[in-house]
Image (cartoon, rainbow, N blue to C red; front, side):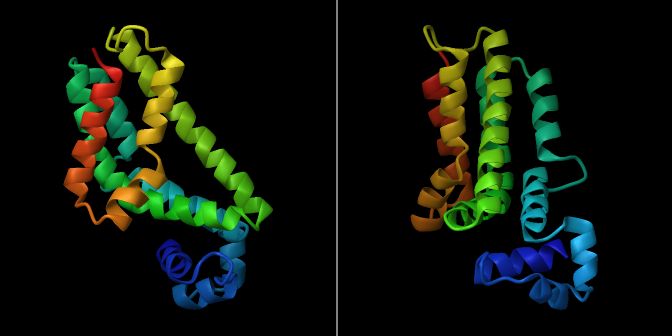
Length: 187
């Protein structure tokens, strides 16, 4: 269901994708979708969650936490985040861009945009605190400033600008994100 919904949302847009069209594409009943996701906002949220998980049996956020707790060098931590970005951004950023576009006219999508922005901000603050705990932040840089820098580098808009609009390959994008954060955050 999620694959069918994602395909339809990304090709038709949020407004023109109906639950009935998703049900037909997924070969399930409309009721099944409503029971599982409570409607279009729930479907979009589930697609975004799936994108954040990345590839493989262990979610990307969990692999990130494990790596950051084991790796001593803050530069290597950030470089590894850059690699994870190349895995997660192609799956999550298009959905967040869809949410942003739909938020202009749909209150439920506006609420979802606010929620996903806040979740990303909380995640970036956790990452900033982890770096700070290792005395890894540049002198004078607060946790809040580091959080905001990381939030900007993880934005769907940056992915849209460099990958979708400028055609950067993912590995170049991941290196840019990592090296930019290293330059902005570390001594």
